[in-house]
Amino acid sequence: MILFLSWLYYLVLGLFALALYFVFKKKKAILKKMVLICTGLTGSGVMALILCEQRLPLYGAFEATIYIIFILCLTEILFWKDSKDMPIVNTCGGTACISLLLLIYHNTQPKTFNPDFFMYANPWVNLFFNLRLTAGALFTRVALLYLAGIMNENQKFKQGILFSSARQMLLVGLVIFLCSEWAGSWWCLNWLGDSWRWSKGFFKAAIIFLLVMLSCHLPPSLSRNPRIRALTGSLPALFLLWVIFYH
Image (cartoon, rainbow, N blue to C red; front, side, top):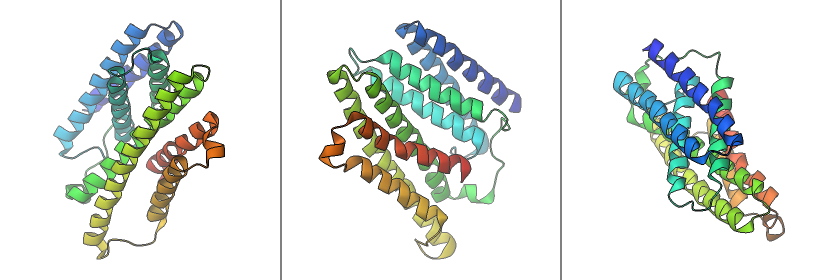
């Protein structure tokens, strides 16, 4: 299994590095195929984890990275069906860049799944950590869409569609994040006898919620500025990725 996961890691790393070349060449068709291949590869890693470990992807540098990239690629593919005349090269390039950065950053980490632990049998633990990873991937997609919108600042129609898609994805990500917190509250209730306790974890979760609310409720004078909208819309992704990989 370790050999398979190592090959998987370096193959996905190489494909995303190669994808950047085709971004510069603006080869949309090839980029789409490479994203599809990377989706299949990372999906095989997720399936291997589920079948071998009998649980969902939870946390840990390797499995979190593979799962987040898998969700990122899936959301990129879903974007294509409603993306006539949209900057596919930009969004594919953004997906490749973010995935490549995550893979390179965790290059020194073991290419293996987290060791088994008795808590992993708890369904609330599975839901809490997996939904948090899913929300992190969706928030990252939001940041990518906002960045693509800024890159198309001179084309207001395209920017409007990208920003609208980003806002919708932000709200979907928030719903999934709140479902994660709900599962965490049940875990906390079964573990400690109370569904809520003030701690660093709950404080960080509150910050993520407030960052999403900030992005959705900017004053009109600020929301008219595309760069401010893009910056505030990207903050949940930056903070939640920090929580996932450094908590």
